[in-house]
Image (spheres, rainbow, N blue to C red):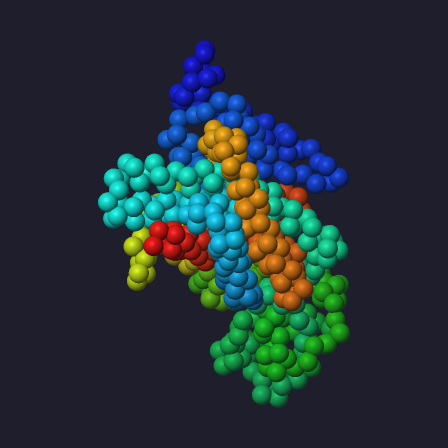
Length: 561
């Protein structure tokens, strides 16, 4: 029993990790003046247990840390994938420029501290990696340190031991790298008098997202289409829209390919925001009608949402399924990962998509049987794409990217690679018949397990030398790390809010992503209850990770030149 509680075996390691995770989550339930650190308590409890002498097998800790981080970022990528690219187009360039500014500011502060205090720049690189919670940057810096030392005649063993001071500096600065960013978020929220609920409502109310569905009520006023069949109009003019119903006088009908458009006809059109002007030019101006106007006069037509639960439909285009001609049902919108998409003919569908249908009750029932519409089928997890995606992500993240003059190749690492692959799977999976659907609860479970394992492993690993490093002069590293955390993040928050007018949730994602800081992302989501942060986190994370790893190596090269 002694080995179970104080040893280094597998059983002890698992028990210690479980205790730290369970205890940290329990402590995270307590709030002080409405503020809770949430799962970040796992990190601090892990540091405490490591300091008290409870440790685990180093190989086990390393595996748990990396695997937990992979699970966390991969689940984030799958979640944001469907809406990632339209989010990037609508503000991704600005977000990544702000993230790059945050990275370069951290380098500038690190350099300035080294010059003003005389602290060794290589040590300061370790402090910087901890202050921005970037483990891959630390690893790259250590490897570069060893390579340069070995080239200078030092043995590999001696160079490896000499590089450990970077890890000590990293461990001391890491906690404030988490707490500091959280403090900036809280102080920035107070400084700008931000109401998170109001910010959330503004995000939900925005109707300028390119692919978001929008209803229009228009009158046929264009002489060029008088007397033409609907199929001919669609063929000649095209567009990303669906004509849901036609009103001729007081009679409402379900439009078919042979429906003839006449002057004065009223149309219920579902389209995307960027197509609005085109619809007005093609058909005519909007008329003052409401959705209920169609429902009151159209008793035999109903609107229902059905769910695609047959995997063999994944990767098929809507036009291939011919719902309108085969079932007499019009699909007006597709709901995917909480985003409403226009049901354009070339849209690929996938398992888990919600289809907003218009038709008779009987016809919709027939269509429901065709697509499945079974919640039981959705509860079965699709594990193959997840684990094969992780395989591809690890391979992608391990590809070396070389730059002239830099001896060590840059890699996206075990976090950046899987994140990018998960985003691509979430977005392009349906097109290539890959079913990536997971229920919201399953995705959240995967995410929470991943971040919990990561924080527990980091905390336990850092706790062993945490206090001794502080006593032996490391207390200065805490101050330096705090400055490296607060100054760049604080400036970025102010610029993002005051000059770029970003939403609070966008800023939370920007800051946590630019600092490659999963604990802060988990805090923001848990504290303010929204997944909008995740989209912006994923938008800036890949470039930020790349830059963090690059600048860490450059600083080591300068320090040892």
